[in-house]
Image 1 (spheres, rainbow, N blue to C red):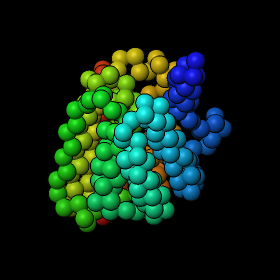
Image 2 (image 1 turned 90 degrees about the vertical axis):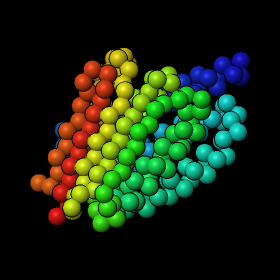
Image 3 (image 1 turned 60 degrees about the vertical axis):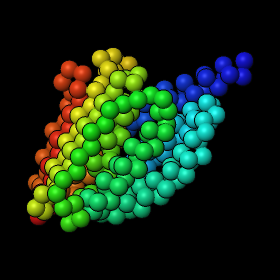
Image 4 (image 1 turned 90 degrees about the horizontal axis):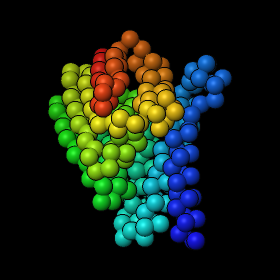
Length: 226
């Protein structure tokens, strides 16, 4: 009986995790305030993470302590970075790598294929915080976690003269859109916030293409920081 209650609680938490969205009136007005972006994105990240920790604790995983320590460190970095107008590409890549390390713990025995490549001189490139990170988080939320061990993700980050090119591709289950009530990768709170942030901080200096084709979701972002 106790195990059944725990399972029901865990299932409810994961269902509500996908329900985080903006009220209809806020969607109409868009995200006009950078501070609103920061307040919305951080609880979204924290809620996802707490769900994962809860799942580990239910399983009594030996990695629960490691995951808590890793989450604490990552959360501190996320909060620090989100308070800045711009961060270095090095910092953004570090966040992504830390996040992927945590996902490996959270997923447990569920395997996935990862191909992450970073090229160019990243230290001299600046970008708004958590932009690339949010795209990677979405790859796991809508793809890797739902592929039952068959998931894959490719990430390319190329630092160019005064700018960057980011590409990600991941497998998405064929039932994902129906399970999300018609919502897709690019209709969630995180993506809306990123698009608004790019428009505010990189007006006329970025190009973003993202969408799904078949069972693959792809993102390509170019930022010219000059």
